[in-house]
Image (cartoon, rainbow, N blue to C red):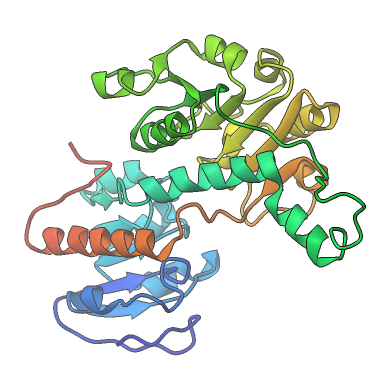
Length: 335
Protein backbone atom coordinates (compact mmCIF):
# COMPACT_ATOMS: atom_id res chain seq x y z
CA UNK A 1 0.00 0.00 0.00
CA UNK A 2 1.11 3.57 -0.65
CA UNK A 3 0.79 5.93 2.28
CA UNK A 4 -1.45 8.92 1.77
CA UNK A 5 0.24 12.22 2.43
CA UNK A 6 0.35 15.87 1.51
CA UNK A 7 3.91 15.91 0.34
CA UNK A 8 5.64 15.21 3.66
CA UNK A 9 5.77 11.44 3.97
CA UNK A 10 6.05 9.12 1.02
CA UNK A 11 6.52 5.46 0.33
CA UNK A 12 7.99 4.12 -2.86
CA UNK A 13 8.22 0.72 -4.42
CA UNK A 14 10.42 0.01 -7.42
CA UNK A 15 9.29 -2.24 -10.26
CA UNK A 16 9.47 -0.58 -13.68
CA UNK A 17 9.21 3.13 -14.39
CA UNK A 18 8.82 5.81 -11.74
CA UNK A 19 5.21 6.93 -11.40
CA UNK A 20 4.07 10.07 -9.58
CA UNK A 21 0.46 11.06 -8.88
CA UNK A 22 0.40 14.80 -8.24
CA UNK A 23 -3.11 15.21 -6.80
CA UNK A 24 -4.82 11.93 -6.02
CA UNK A 25 -7.05 12.92 -3.11
CA UNK A 26 -10.26 13.84 -4.94
CA UNK A 27 -10.09 10.64 -7.00
CA UNK A 28 -9.30 8.52 -3.95
CA UNK A 29 -9.86 10.11 -0.53
CA UNK A 30 -9.37 6.69 1.02
CA UNK A 31 -12.30 4.58 -0.15
CA UNK A 32 -10.51 3.15 -3.21
CA UNK A 33 -7.13 1.45 -3.65
CA UNK A 34 -4.03 2.48 -5.60
CA UNK A 35 -2.64 -1.07 -5.52
CA UNK A 36 -3.18 -1.77 -9.23
CA UNK A 37 -1.26 1.37 -10.18
CA UNK A 38 1.43 0.59 -7.61
CA UNK A 39 1.94 -2.80 -9.21
CA UNK A 40 3.08 -1.09 -12.42
CA UNK A 41 6.02 0.91 -11.12
CA UNK A 42 7.82 2.81 -8.38
CA UNK A 43 4.86 4.86 -7.24
CA UNK A 44 4.61 8.07 -5.23
CA UNK A 45 1.16 9.49 -4.53
CA UNK A 46 0.51 13.03 -3.34
CA UNK A 47 -2.89 14.17 -2.13
CA UNK A 48 -2.34 17.56 -3.76
CA UNK A 49 0.59 19.53 -5.18
CA UNK A 50 0.97 23.31 -5.16
CA UNK A 51 2.24 24.81 -8.41
CA UNK A 52 5.61 25.72 -6.93
CA UNK A 53 6.33 22.07 -6.09
CA UNK A 54 5.31 20.43 -9.38
CA UNK A 55 8.83 20.32 -10.82
CA UNK A 56 10.36 18.97 -7.61
CA UNK A 57 7.76 16.27 -7.16
CA UNK A 58 7.92 15.06 -10.74
CA UNK A 59 11.70 14.93 -10.53
CA UNK A 60 12.96 12.12 -12.76
CA UNK A 61 9.61 10.29 -12.96
CA UNK A 62 8.71 8.87 -16.35
CA UNK A 63 4.96 8.60 -15.74
CA UNK A 64 3.05 11.59 -14.35
CA UNK A 65 -0.59 11.42 -13.31
CA UNK A 66 -2.57 14.61 -12.69
CA UNK A 67 -6.14 15.63 -12.11
CA UNK A 68 -6.15 19.41 -11.84
CA UNK A 69 -2.47 20.19 -11.22
CA UNK A 70 -1.12 22.11 -14.26
CA UNK A 71 1.69 20.67 -16.35
CA UNK A 72 2.81 23.46 -18.66
CA UNK A 73 5.58 23.95 -21.21
CA UNK A 74 8.06 24.98 -18.53
CA UNK A 75 7.52 21.75 -16.61
CA UNK A 76 8.04 19.68 -19.76
CA UNK A 77 11.26 21.58 -20.45
CA UNK A 78 12.59 21.09 -16.93
CA UNK A 79 11.42 17.51 -16.33
CA UNK A 80 13.13 15.85 -19.26
CA UNK A 81 12.41 12.30 -18.13
CA UNK A 82 8.63 12.48 -18.65
CA UNK A 83 7.47 9.85 -21.13
CA UNK A 84 3.74 9.71 -20.35
CA UNK A 85 1.11 11.97 -18.79
CA UNK A 86 -2.19 10.58 -17.54
CA UNK A 87 -5.12 12.82 -16.67
CA UNK A 88 -7.59 11.59 -14.04
CA UNK A 89 -10.45 13.28 -15.88
CA UNK A 90 -12.04 13.67 -19.28
CA UNK A 91 -10.94 17.29 -19.66
CA UNK A 92 -7.22 17.80 -20.22
CA UNK A 93 -6.83 21.58 -20.40
CA UNK A 94 -4.46 21.49 -17.39
CA UNK A 95 -1.78 19.92 -19.61
CA UNK A 96 0.08 21.67 -22.44
CA UNK A 97 -0.80 18.92 -24.91
CA UNK A 98 0.94 20.63 -27.83
CA UNK A 99 4.31 20.76 -26.10
CA UNK A 100 3.81 17.15 -25.01
CA UNK A 101 3.09 16.13 -28.61
CA UNK A 102 6.19 17.93 -29.86
CA UNK A 103 8.22 15.89 -27.41
CA UNK A 104 6.49 12.64 -28.34
CA UNK A 105 4.81 12.38 -24.94
CA UNK A 106 1.27 10.97 -25.02
CA UNK A 107 -1.34 12.65 -22.83
CA UNK A 108 -4.04 10.11 -22.02
CA UNK A 109 -7.39 10.98 -20.50
CA UNK A 110 -10.45 9.09 -19.26
CA UNK A 111 -12.95 9.49 -22.10
CA UNK A 112 -15.99 8.13 -20.31
CA UNK A 113 -16.58 6.94 -16.78
CA UNK A 114 -19.34 9.00 -15.16
CA UNK A 115 -22.07 9.17 -17.78
CA UNK A 116 -24.88 7.85 -15.59
CA UNK A 117 -23.66 9.69 -12.50
CA UNK A 118 -23.61 13.07 -14.25
CA UNK A 119 -27.03 12.48 -15.82
CA UNK A 120 -28.34 11.56 -12.38
CA UNK A 121 -26.90 14.80 -10.97
CA UNK A 122 -28.69 16.84 -13.63
CA UNK A 123 -31.98 15.55 -12.30
CA UNK A 124 -30.90 15.90 -8.68
CA UNK A 125 -30.45 19.62 -9.32
CA UNK A 126 -33.58 19.90 -11.44
CA UNK A 127 -35.81 18.06 -8.98
CA UNK A 128 -34.52 20.18 -6.12
CA UNK A 129 -35.53 23.26 -8.11
CA UNK A 130 -38.93 21.71 -8.82
CA UNK A 131 -39.70 20.52 -5.28
CA UNK A 132 -37.22 22.14 -2.84
CA UNK A 133 -37.03 18.88 -0.94
CA UNK A 134 -34.23 20.05 1.34
CA UNK A 135 -36.01 23.27 2.27
CA UNK A 136 -39.28 21.50 3.01
CA UNK A 137 -37.56 18.84 5.09
CA UNK A 138 -35.86 21.52 7.19
CA UNK A 139 -39.17 23.36 7.58
CA UNK A 140 -40.81 20.21 8.92
CA UNK A 141 -37.95 19.61 11.35
CA UNK A 142 -38.25 23.21 12.55
CA UNK A 143 -41.87 22.60 13.48
CA UNK A 144 -43.64 24.37 10.64
CA UNK A 145 -45.78 21.34 9.81
CA UNK A 146 -46.59 20.55 13.43
CA UNK A 147 -47.85 24.10 13.86
CA UNK A 148 -49.57 24.40 10.50
CA UNK A 149 -53.32 25.00 10.39
CA UNK A 150 -53.69 22.90 7.21
CA UNK A 151 -52.71 19.30 6.61
CA UNK A 152 -49.96 20.31 4.17
CA UNK A 153 -48.07 23.36 2.99
CA UNK A 154 -45.38 24.35 0.50
CA UNK A 155 -42.96 27.24 0.65
CA UNK A 156 -42.25 27.50 -3.08
CA UNK A 157 -44.25 26.81 -6.22
CA UNK A 158 -43.96 23.12 -7.13
CA UNK A 159 -43.23 22.17 -10.74
CA UNK A 160 -44.25 19.09 -12.73
CA UNK A 161 -41.85 18.15 -15.52
CA UNK A 162 -44.17 16.05 -17.70
CA UNK A 163 -45.07 17.88 -20.89
CA UNK A 164 -42.29 20.45 -20.56
CA UNK A 165 -39.40 20.72 -22.98
CA UNK A 166 -35.78 20.04 -22.10
CA UNK A 167 -33.12 21.45 -24.40
CA UNK A 168 -29.74 19.72 -24.24
CA UNK A 169 -26.70 21.58 -25.54
CA UNK A 170 -24.11 18.97 -26.51
CA UNK A 171 -25.57 15.57 -27.30
CA UNK A 172 -22.76 13.13 -26.65
CA UNK A 173 -22.86 10.22 -24.21
CA UNK A 174 -23.92 12.31 -21.23
CA UNK A 175 -26.33 14.47 -23.18
CA UNK A 176 -28.06 11.37 -24.54
CA UNK A 177 -28.26 9.84 -21.04
CA UNK A 178 -29.92 13.04 -19.81
CA UNK A 179 -32.29 12.92 -22.77
CA UNK A 180 -33.38 9.38 -21.91
CA UNK A 181 -34.11 10.39 -18.33
CA UNK A 182 -36.02 13.44 -19.51
CA UNK A 183 -38.20 11.26 -21.72
CA UNK A 184 -38.83 8.95 -18.76
CA UNK A 185 -40.21 12.00 -16.94
CA UNK A 186 -42.55 12.66 -19.86
CA UNK A 187 -40.59 15.62 -21.20
CA UNK A 188 -40.12 16.62 -24.82
CA UNK A 189 -36.42 16.65 -25.71
CA UNK A 190 -34.58 19.00 -28.05
CA UNK A 191 -30.86 18.71 -28.75
CA UNK A 192 -28.17 20.85 -30.30
CA UNK A 193 -24.93 19.27 -31.46
CA UNK A 194 -22.60 19.83 -34.39
CA UNK A 195 -22.63 16.10 -35.10
CA UNK A 196 -26.11 14.63 -35.46
CA UNK A 197 -26.53 10.85 -35.48
CA UNK A 198 -29.26 8.25 -35.62
CA UNK A 199 -28.91 7.30 -31.95
CA UNK A 200 -29.53 10.91 -31.02
CA UNK A 201 -32.49 11.22 -33.36
CA UNK A 202 -34.16 8.32 -31.54
CA UNK A 203 -34.05 10.35 -28.30
CA UNK A 204 -34.44 13.98 -29.31
CA UNK A 205 -35.30 16.38 -32.09
CA UNK A 206 -32.15 18.14 -33.31
CA UNK A 207 -32.64 21.88 -33.64
CA UNK A 208 -30.52 25.01 -34.04
CA UNK A 209 -29.13 26.57 -30.90
CA UNK A 210 -31.41 29.57 -31.23
CA UNK A 211 -34.45 27.30 -31.58
CA UNK A 212 -33.38 25.37 -28.51
CA UNK A 213 -33.08 28.59 -26.52
CA UNK A 214 -36.51 29.77 -27.69
CA UNK A 215 -38.44 26.54 -27.09
CA UNK A 216 -36.94 24.99 -23.95
CA UNK A 217 -38.37 25.18 -20.45
CA UNK A 218 -35.20 23.59 -19.08
CA UNK A 219 -31.73 23.90 -20.64
CA UNK A 220 -28.93 21.53 -19.65
CA UNK A 221 -25.35 22.14 -20.78
CA UNK A 222 -23.20 19.19 -21.88
CA UNK A 223 -20.82 20.68 -24.44
CA UNK A 224 -17.04 20.84 -24.09
CA UNK A 225 -15.23 24.05 -23.19
CA UNK A 226 -13.63 25.58 -26.25
CA UNK A 227 -12.93 29.23 -27.11
CA UNK A 228 -16.17 29.23 -29.13
CA UNK A 229 -18.25 27.97 -26.19
CA UNK A 230 -16.66 30.05 -23.43
CA UNK A 231 -19.30 32.43 -22.10
CA UNK A 232 -21.95 31.06 -24.46
CA UNK A 233 -24.60 31.59 -21.79
CA UNK A 234 -24.58 35.36 -21.57
CA UNK A 235 -26.89 38.35 -21.73
CA UNK A 236 -27.44 37.91 -25.48
CA UNK A 237 -28.23 34.20 -25.39
CA UNK A 238 -30.37 34.48 -22.26
CA UNK A 239 -32.48 37.11 -24.03
CA UNK A 240 -33.37 34.44 -26.61
CA UNK A 241 -34.67 32.06 -23.93
CA UNK A 242 -38.18 31.67 -22.58
CA UNK A 243 -39.09 33.80 -19.59
CA UNK A 244 -38.77 31.61 -16.51
CA UNK A 245 -36.35 29.11 -18.06
CA UNK A 246 -34.43 26.75 -15.77
CA UNK A 247 -30.70 26.34 -16.47
CA UNK A 248 -28.57 23.37 -15.40
CA UNK A 249 -24.79 23.18 -15.79
CA UNK A 250 -22.84 20.04 -14.93
CA UNK A 251 -20.33 20.51 -17.75
CA UNK A 252 -17.81 23.37 -17.42
CA UNK A 253 -18.19 26.54 -15.39
CA UNK A 254 -16.77 28.99 -17.97
CA UNK A 255 -19.57 28.12 -20.39
CA UNK A 256 -21.56 30.67 -18.39
CA UNK A 257 -20.98 34.38 -17.95
CA UNK A 258 -21.85 34.30 -14.27
CA UNK A 259 -22.49 38.03 -13.90
CA UNK A 260 -25.03 37.90 -16.72
CA UNK A 261 -26.69 34.80 -15.28
CA UNK A 262 -26.87 36.39 -11.82
CA UNK A 263 -28.59 39.42 -13.33
CA UNK A 264 -31.08 37.16 -15.14
CA UNK A 265 -31.76 35.21 -11.93
CA UNK A 266 -32.39 38.40 -9.98
CA UNK A 267 -34.79 39.69 -12.66
CA UNK A 268 -36.43 36.22 -12.81
CA UNK A 269 -35.84 36.00 -16.56
CA UNK A 270 -34.17 32.75 -15.47
CA UNK A 271 -36.41 31.08 -12.89
CA UNK A 272 -33.58 29.10 -11.32
CA UNK A 273 -30.15 27.71 -12.05
CA UNK A 274 -28.49 24.54 -10.80
CA UNK A 275 -24.72 24.58 -11.22
CA UNK A 276 -22.30 21.86 -10.19
CA UNK A 277 -19.43 23.79 -11.81
CA UNK A 278 -18.35 27.42 -11.73
CA UNK A 279 -15.79 29.55 -13.54
CA UNK A 280 -13.10 29.22 -10.87
CA UNK A 281 -12.91 26.23 -8.53
CA UNK A 282 -12.97 26.26 -5.57
CA UNK A 283 -15.63 28.95 -5.91
CA UNK A 284 -14.51 32.48 -5.09
CA UNK A 285 -16.23 34.31 -2.26
CA UNK A 286 -17.31 37.07 -4.66
CA UNK A 287 -18.89 34.79 -7.27
CA UNK A 288 -22.13 36.59 -8.20
CA UNK A 289 -24.16 33.37 -8.16
CA UNK A 290 -23.64 33.06 -4.41
CA UNK A 291 -25.94 36.01 -3.87
CA UNK A 292 -28.85 34.57 -5.87
CA UNK A 293 -31.56 32.91 -3.77
CA UNK A 294 -32.72 30.97 -6.84
CA UNK A 295 -29.38 29.35 -7.59
CA UNK A 296 -28.37 25.90 -6.36
CA UNK A 297 -24.61 25.43 -6.25
CA UNK A 298 -22.83 22.15 -5.55
CA UNK A 299 -19.04 21.64 -5.31
CA UNK A 300 -18.34 19.78 -8.60
CA UNK A 301 -19.62 16.43 -7.36
CA UNK A 302 -21.51 15.09 -10.38
CA UNK A 303 -18.56 12.86 -11.29
CA UNK A 304 -17.80 11.70 -7.76
CA UNK A 305 -19.92 8.67 -6.77
CA UNK A 306 -17.63 5.85 -5.68
CA UNK A 307 -18.74 3.70 -8.59
CA UNK A 308 -17.72 6.38 -11.09
CA UNK A 309 -14.38 6.99 -9.42
CA UNK A 310 -13.64 3.25 -9.46
CA UNK A 311 -14.31 3.16 -13.21
CA UNK A 312 -12.02 6.16 -13.60
CA UNK A 313 -9.30 4.41 -11.59
CA UNK A 314 -9.62 1.25 -13.66
CA UNK A 315 -9.30 3.14 -16.95
CA UNK A 316 -6.37 5.22 -15.67
CA UNK A 317 -4.50 2.07 -14.66
CA UNK A 318 -5.32 0.37 -17.97
CA UNK A 319 -4.00 3.44 -19.82
CA UNK A 320 -0.67 3.15 -17.99
CA UNK A 321 -0.53 -0.62 -18.41
CA UNK A 322 -1.12 -0.35 -22.15
CA UNK A 323 1.58 2.30 -22.44
CA UNK A 324 4.08 0.09 -20.63
CA UNK A 325 3.14 -2.74 -22.98
CA UNK A 326 3.85 -0.56 -26.01
CA UNK A 327 0.29 0.42 -26.92
CA UNK A 328 -0.98 3.93 -26.26
CA UNK A 329 -4.74 4.28 -25.76
CA UNK A 330 -6.94 7.30 -25.07
CA UNK A 331 -4.20 9.73 -26.12
CA UNK A 332 -5.65 13.17 -26.83
CA UNK A 333 -2.57 14.58 -28.56
CA UNK A 334 -1.44 11.74 -30.82
CA UNK A 335 -2.88 10.64 -34.16
